[in-house]
Image (tube, rainbow, N blue to C red; front, side):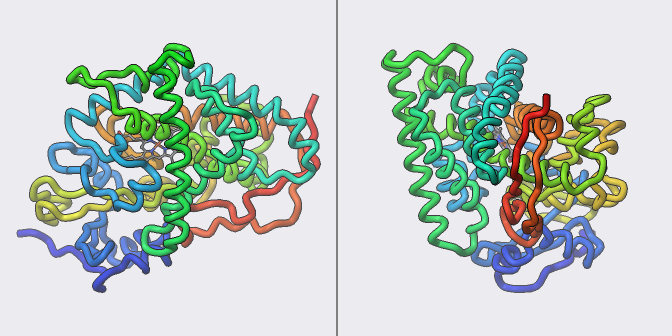
Length: 421
Ligand code: HEM
């Protein structure tokens, strides 16, 4: 007999979700004392929300879970793009994913590490001249430069800032799933502008008018053929190329969180600077666990599923609790404490540290850029902790867990930047 599933009653809880943000799920898993509850969202659609390690294991079981057609259309149109890899399934997904994963060679990742380090270092003079620097904004621009260079994309320096701001709008748009139509429209326009630019780069590469280096994302996406021997449509190639650069730019949110953590938590700056026993790595992992970014992920049941004795009927929407899983007491001791050393003895499970999805990189939708994110954050945090000194003026340091997507309210201002010798 199937155990009853607790219900968060209401005809459509989308507005409640937007109002409670990252806390919506954990408020209910705690209230119901259950790893699963039923709700209704996006026009009253029935959804089963699941939380925890066992939930993540289920969510990444391709025999039981379908991902195609489950993302809200608005999120596809602004954040990921039409036809994006995130919306694919089965053989097409595994084939396209192999293209993304082929970029993650040791050489490419080492190159990314060096680029990040050098770009921040070279940017110091600019930050000195600026007086006050908003870390959130400054890192969008810097990461756009890193992303373009790493991907083999060339652009006039004066255009970079516009692309950077456009990508930030796309990322911000996922907070407007239920409301904020204006933000949605602007994000769509922003996406069209960057897609147009990247598509021109793909076409120019194919025609031999520009020559990105072999192994770069631009070169790979331009020349890749699918399992049937077909080149990608140039627009689709631009969409997927953007799915390398836009999320890289989104790391700016972690950068602002990181600079906040260096400021707020005693001793962290010294420990990251010394980087003994890979402390910068552990600090980065803890940043990704502790601070809010992706709240949850949607899917649907491919078959009738048994989850802890509860039956989830075929075709029902399933939502995996990402943020709540990163803050569960059964997985993380004292989860509200910022404590990088917890990663000293972490077993590397693919189902508990899931800020960028879980499961397998090649066969599941787990983030293709997780190693890139860790590398960029390690180098960026070492730069802020070790290479420069700065003052932190009074400002609003709030990280409001009820607002999607999460960010430091002030964006993290620093001033009077000095280079350490
Ligand atoms: C997928 C988060 C950085 C490329 C994902 C997913 C999440 C995520 C939650 C979906 C997982 C799932 O559906 O199961 C993040 C966060 C990032 C980040 C929070 C840092 C701010 C990156 C970077 C890249 C990247 C730097 C560059 C390559 C992708 C791609 C997918 C993806 C291509 C789709 C994978 C697939 O559908 O198989 N990411 N990501 N992400 N991410 Fe990231």
